[in-house]
Length: 302
Image (cartoon, rainbow, N blue to C red; front, top):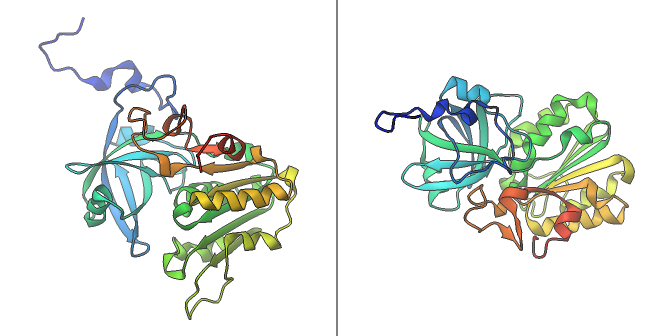
């Protein structure tokens, strides 16, 4: 029996010593473990977005921490609050994550003022993930619009780092204007990889833009799709899902082979605040990654 009058180290509890359960659907409790972390570097991507490279301080905890493409973490800024953020880094690195954060509120504003060495808290990872393992041996479409490249980036890394496991790979990305492009410093690297088709499009070009102009669906015009041999991951604003996925459906791709992220609906990560629910479905618990057939059967999901 525990001595109630002596300090007790909760890290010795049996569930604390077990490997992380990615989704925790059956075991999620009212609280979850918070990893103390440090901001290693801050990279300015646009006027509104920054990339934060974050390291878990405790080495043993860092070794235990892992995630799958499409999952998210809860980021705590002491004194300001907590927000859900999709992980943008490669799954091959342990104890380290990259988080692309748009300045949009009190917590994100505080993060954008943070410097190297600042301490934050991380809970997670939470949520479902993109089925990268299932996609091996097939053609893959990786499609992102605007900020959607942030949650898609970990899937891009997963495919690139295991390029031999996939057939034809297309990376399609579109934004409103050139000054809103994310991770533009990596396009040349991705485009140089053998058999990777990278295309970037903008709706409103400036005087220096030389690439294609229009909606992202325009990039699908030049791609031959074998509906039964192709998977698609689509990330971006909800209105984009309808146009892109409808276009793929018209070309015969099954809705079960298209996967989207409803990461914009994330809130507490544990289904407690009820702000992520779509009818009886809690996006924090059942998502954020869904196949398109499921999304179309969730009223007002997009």
